[in-house]
Amino acid sequence: MSLPSTRRLQAPLALALTLLVAACASTRGLEPEGRPLNSDSLAASRSLAGTSDAGFPQRDWWKAFGDAQLDGLIGEALAGTPSLDAADARVRQAIAQAGLADAAGKPTLGATALYSGVQIPETVARPPLGGDYLGVTLIGLQFSYSPDLWGGHRARTQAALGQARAAEVDAQAARLMLSSNIARAYVALAQAHDAAEVARADEQRASQLLDLGRQRVKAGLDNQLQIRNAETAVASAQQQEQAAQQQVDAARNAIAALLGQGPDRGLQIAKPALLSAPWPGVPAVVQSELLGHRPDVVAARWRVEAARHGIKASKAEFYPTVNLTALVGLAGGNLSDLFSSDALLASGGPAISLPIFDGGRLRNNLAKSDAEYDLAVANYNQALVGALREVADALQGARSLDAQIASASRARESAQAAWQLATARYKAGLGTQLDVLAAQRPLLQLEQQIAALRAQRLGTSIDLDRALGGGLEFAAPQSVAAQNTNDITQAPTP
Image (cartoon, rainbow, N blue to C red; front, top):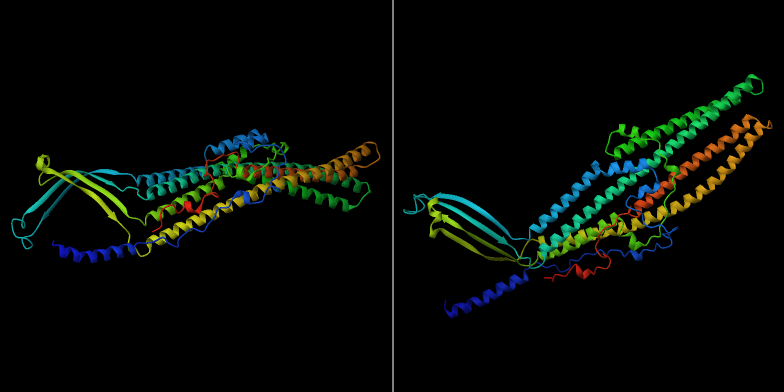
């Protein structure tokens, strides 16, 4: 080409290059809006003040209740149930997805064997090309690699790993939830058994009143009103006993279902001795320490980390990509030709691609990644606030129930003293059996009330153990709140 013609091409080439650069997709104006909360910014020190020197729960926190049957039930459940199987399957799925993301950025090498033939009609090309059948046999190796110039492959891998870590934490959360649900149902079973016993004692008391009333009517000392009142009390006690038995059956069925078994498994569960067990102490809670134990908070943090890398991966798509390909093999018209010195086939080289016009696909993809990050941050913030609320609820509930149990216990002591006094007077001939039975009723009611309060108190202990993470500890991103927003946008902006 002559020099003048070269100069004539310089202007169009410069214009084409300018248009090429100007038309490149840009990330300008697209940034995430979410900001993770700092746990220290949430005032909770007064609400979460500890009431003892106890530490965080142990991994087998339920053993603190001292019930061997409960230990066995939770151990049986953790050995495998459908809910845990599903959680474990999600973990394997997430790990495989991370493996796929990692494999996408690595070189590939494959073997190929190809036979292709064509016959060009003479109406298209004259002989010797037309009219003859031409066949080609090819055997070779194909190599392909796209260097990670902008960190997009690495960011996608890190995002997938973050999701996998979140799934692993979710699997542990499922185990914590399962064990706490079994403990909760076990407490309900214990309370139902106690309620049934109180109802039977009340029925016995009412039956004695009924017998005594009939004797007094027969002796002409009383009228039918006392008999009807006693009959009403007997029927009411029987209804309470039947209701308590229904609660026993429901609690057994619930436990059997949590074990992944049929309702007959629940029939093997004996009466718990749980309500007489001491409850664990309440530790002093520090927010930063809490965040390393709560599986939902840690999983949410990993999802924020994954979304952060997702933004980096979306930004990397705005830059040129380089693909290196190579093919080395043997080709020939016949199989015998493949092994001749002239059959060697080799091709390869780099290919560079740059997005220019894409109809807004890249910008919308980045906007989607920004929104996913904002959603992950919002979920993390909500998990953090919810975690502190659950701990505060359990602590405050425990304190309130301790006070209620103390008040009810004092009332029971007074009722016990009144019943003993009525019994002593009856034995001394100074009182009647009616006085004894009348004094027994408030005593039974208070015993039922205290049993219910103790069940609620044990429930708050279970809630607190779960709210404190159930003795679990997780590896989590160092500090979501400390991450600078610029960390999300490390790649240069087009």
